Length: 323
Image (cartoon, helix red, strand yellow):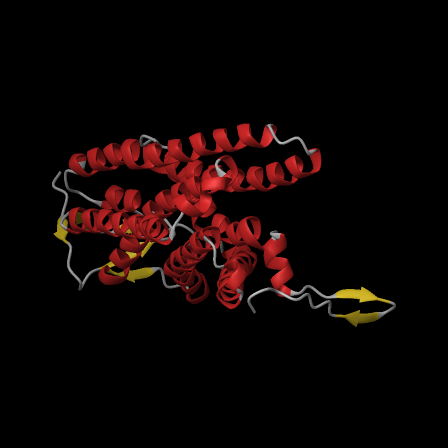
């Protein structure tokens, strides 16, 4: 039997079919996605505004965190609004241009976040393990290189995949079993030979993905080793609590994304990919500003959290050097 295929063109639409059967739970699902989107945007915007307004937070750590916040906002804004639109309007079509814009942004943001998390882990390693040389090692030039390199590699990497996948032929139905134009979902919808794309995904996953993840883990091994040498138990517990929460979010993002793209295809892989994709697309961007910054004493001090005394609200304003 001959399978009718059509070449990709901007006049053709794709169909996102993932959540088309959630009519009974649509309101709960929509409210959940709206809440997660708002929390991500508000949390990250607050972080960027606080860092910009407070000169004492103009340090490498918060510079990298602002990069991460910008990245997360771009990531969720590319995917979640379209998901909400399809759930509210019932229209599951997406144009060729919009689909490959989502593809470019999703791949670029994921690759950039892997490398940016590596830069942040290196920054924390230097701050905790070699604090006396911190200002020398993490100078302005190094910080710019460690932030621009992830964005550059991530964008170039994404352009490669957009080029490869956009030149594939797709089956007549053009159905995408996912909630956005995910790379693996597009490959499933293709009627072309996709072995060269799969080889590229696996090769890059083992080099870029696992290399960056390995660097993060190695950095945290040295960090935890240095923490255990701290004599003051209270200080040791405070630093360990902060680092463990950071590492948990890193493991959640890296583990879920690597599991999706490095997992071989099977009958159950599609459903598993959807659940894991929701973790790194929606959940992790919400957790990042909470775990990395809004629990941080320096950020809370700049926000001047009000304290209540005798039924009246007293705003405790502490003098901040440099403001």
